[in-house]
Length: 217
Image (cartoon, rainbow, N blue to C red; front, top):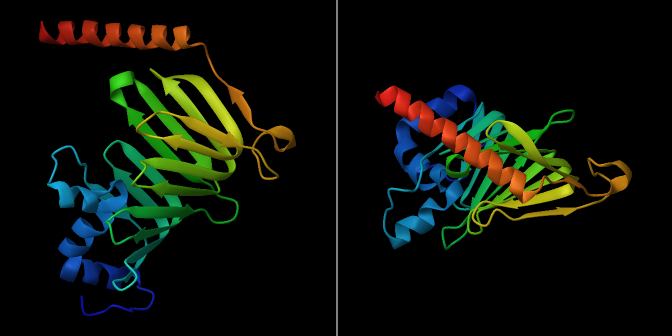
């Protein structure tokens, strides 16, 4: 790219730049929230979903391997959606990427992750969110809340100052602190029994099978 230290980019200038160099930018930088650059080193995989990032402005620094999106940021990658006021994406030499999403005062960052195979939906909110593509791990920081839904019904809720969720392992971690969403700066967890969750999944699967049979005839 010829413009490696470009200043703040307006919406119209951003659209012009994307039209001029969008293919390179979108495929090598934006898609990488899930580690696409790392995947390219090992060979393309049909399972790697593409990533779409919408924003009011974009600042891209080729030397720093950094992209900064601001204003009504919406990131969609496969079945994951993130909304924020600012998103900064940094890539290391190995192709791993780290994203930091920030909300303006009085607003929150939101993350929604669907897991159709288990009929799960994970919804998280916080003042800031961090994503490590190498670990497939989210951190919601400041007034953090993570809620798990199964077949549309709320099951587990975790509150704290920081709540971490690993996409690969399904493991949650939480820390309390002065900016916790739970009273007294504590961590507050409400978790339904595993048997109840399994029953909800089985019921949802049975409904899906019944509906499929009716559709097929």
